[in-house]
Length: 273
Image 1 (cartoon, rainbow, N blue to C red):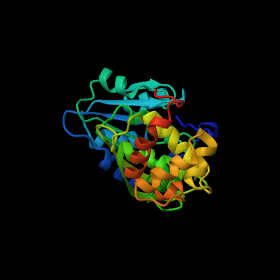
Image 2 (cartoon, rainbow, N blue to C red):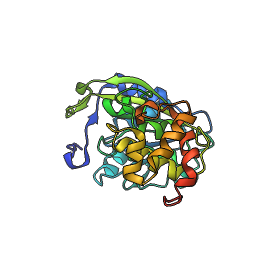
Image 3 (spheres, rainbow, N blue to C red):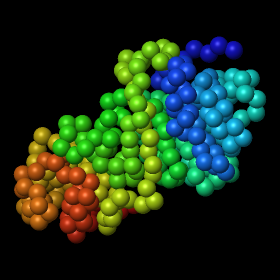
């Protein structure tokens, strides 16, 4: 059975055997634990995963209704959840399929939904997440403070997990070739937020406001968007060893958490849940 990629689903089928093998090696679970594959498509990566983790519990999440029949034809009976990978309850999925204490989530993610999918997976805190993304997005998630690519999604992801870019992948590894290059990243979820804050939701809103006007000073950006007095932000920054004129990209993870803690008494109008 031959199936053409759907542009509407952002499908680019990975066919490079070397790349597939490297991803499967990174995703191999510990004995007694299993795998969740997001977006198996025609099963090219699935084949390598099943070979590397023979006998391990396995479940796939697939949105394209054409694929389950193809996967069944290719591999026999597989556990497949049909639906949008962003909306899946991964904690329930892992528990319902007996994936063990150290499950691994792996996939070649659609570039238009990669980051929301990762956030959904992180909520379940699997042992490891191995995913393919657009290269620029992957680099942004792992970016360090002070760099041009460091933004609110960098801070959020790095507060939730250790992240490393494993390797980059050229356009020719896919059919059809995407317009951009790709990269595989490995995330190791943390048991709790890397730095304690009074409210994660308020910190998230603070990040969105601060980076939303990154050409402005942080004091000005927060004053404009979430109505925190500019002087209060400046005082908090100075107390944390930062210049009063600091911009969002200057603050590292620990400083963002400390700033959220300092300003929390002024953030009562923001949601906490």
